[in-house]
Length: 330
Image 1 (cartoon, rainbow, N blue to C red):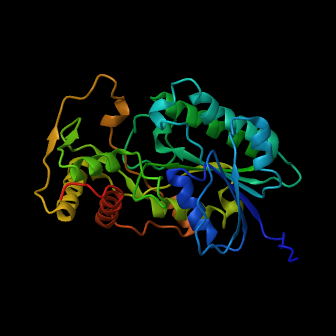
Image 2 (image 1 turned 90 degrees about the vertical axis):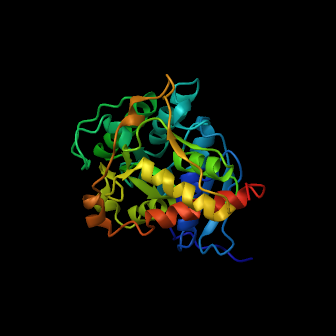
């Protein structure tokens, strides 16, 4: 019987079947380490994985299951999101997933003698209404939505534990993430994918404003690379939040017209129109605010930079969604 070496670091990825989690899992699978992929359903392991991968199915809102899932982990990457996405945060159970799991996790992994690295997916939305563009990380946090409040609370718990020497905490604050799913069933639920699906179905793309609202759009492959880069620089990154972004603020009107163009190229039909409509009453204020990110500090420490250009990323997203729906308009 061959005994697997145990001197390689053990990295537990929580939420390993989600949109971001599956991409991070795939990025780390090529490394010489031990991976524990944890989620409610079994995670897909890349066929060419170099890492030793253990797949664990667990409900991480159960403290005992959480403790078992991170046992002996040198690194924990916290990518959990409540079912239904960020808009479901105010529903029963939202706070339990978005805050409670972090609180339980820190209780379980706290180790002042050998503090583990805990990497968290925060959001640029935690700042609330951007006081300027680009954001550089020095802005005060004044979240405007329940989701952003919960993310900020979880981040503060992590950084307080880090300051106390119980863990080495790092939060990567992400802007709008988009792109193609790494494995089937992990397609993006964000606005870019939603509009790409409409365009592929021959439906008009709608805007809740005049199209000049800007977003810093980061492709999922670049986000996964940012998390992977974090593992290489724990000493420099631990103890604070870092902004990750492209440094570009692209007008959503232009983005959606590009989505329509790529969908038309795939379907062979004319590009669907991009139209402004009256926003619904439930639309949060953040949907009408522009966001651009200056990630110079994170880039300077890690050497990370986004590699997927916007047009390439949009084309890949549309192609993947078209493949997932073979009956898309032709």
